[in-house]
Amino acid sequence: MDLNINGKRALVFASSEGLGKAIAKELVAEGAKVIISSRNSEKLASAAKEINAVDFIPCDLLVKGAARDLTRAAIEKLGGLDILVTNAGGPPTGLFKDITTEQWESSYQSLFMSLVEAVQVALPEMSKTGWGRILMVTSVAAKEPIANLTISSSLRAGVHGLVNAVSKEIGVNGITINALMPTFTATERLKELRPNAEDLISKIPMRRLGKPEELGKLTAFLASDHAGFITGQAIAYDGGSLAGI
Image 1 (cartoon, rainbow, N blue to C red):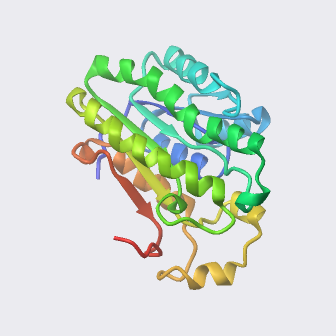
Image 2 (cartoon, rainbow, N blue to C red):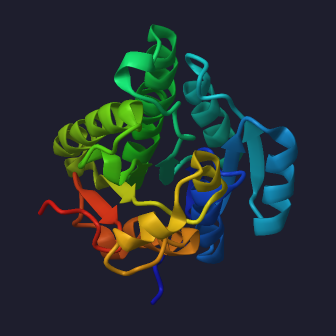
């Protein structure tokens, strides 16, 4: 299927590895001109070469205003912006009683305000052409909170509210905005959480972990012309593990 995104200009957050890298790789494979970003310049340079990204821009989403500057820099390099994929590394884990105010504040910046900053910059550019795709990677924890992922479960749910609210304003300009909710996926981040893999898999009806490349393909589809009537949604990539409907 031709997704008709050949030549489209894209920026993908947190894409030197893991889910972000898989998404960027799939967009490149479909012919999009992609700029990737993360905090680690060395990993970025390696990933950009590996997936044939147009360029890379280091950015720390924990810093106020950094996402805004990143998006502006990408627009300048690409000559515009058609596809924006926001993604952020997982916040600190822990129970509510153990989480500090500082951890809440830094996570709010990276998981929520960085998205707001980027969209504020991207929307005027997309409106100029009457076409745009905004995809926000969240988590199944945003719909069904997961024990020990208190910050992620809380803040990412707010992102879903943002997605739906903004969709009501921008549809008239030919721009869609959706969230993607991955479940436990075979990435380095999962290894950091040190879960019991067998226990996780037993709770997923498909009886396996997700694959980053599969989420990449789903994102590319939602960034295409074929998904032009899908907006304001939080779409699960979960192997059937969510209990709610």
